[in-house]
Amino acid sequence: MIIIIMGVSGAGKTTIGKLLADALNWEFKDADEFHSIDNIEKMRLGIPLNDTDRKPWLKDLQTAIALWLKENVNIVLACSALKANYRQYLVLDAECIKLIYLHGSLDLLQQRLIGRQNHFMSEKLLNSQLDALEEPDDAIFVDVSEPPQLIVQNLKTVLGI
Image 1 (spheres, rainbow, N blue to C red):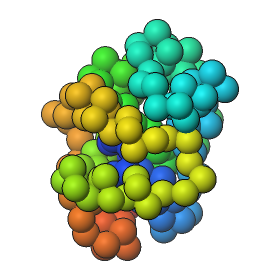
Image 2: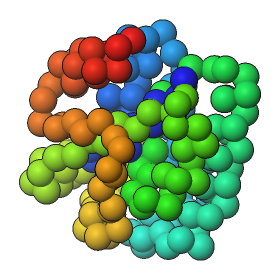
Image 3: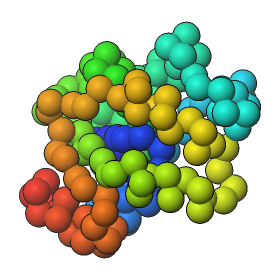
């Protein structure tokens, strides 16, 4: 099974993803690792990515997801997956891929991004991500104002694993 933890920057995708993967004894992957150097540099400079920038990234993610499904590997993947068409591209098998949507207030997300260190994603890009976000209809919604350990505990219950 693959669990995609999605949401805008600052929602806690990596934090929750790593904690959930550890709790399930699964592998954790971060979609940021699939970005090109050019994309990372654009984001570091506060320049939003467009669909053209994201296309090779999505293709590489789709290839990885297909391989994980073929190998029957359990993965928690942190991935923004902001638009519905991105998610359609990534969710190759709705039976084996579950979406978890992390959402929170603008104030909370901004506070987290301002306090973040050693990450290329600038808080200046939050508004562009919120503008691009198309909330999913088929995901488990999670309020990120709760403590991460409680979120993970609740997710394990909801997922039944």
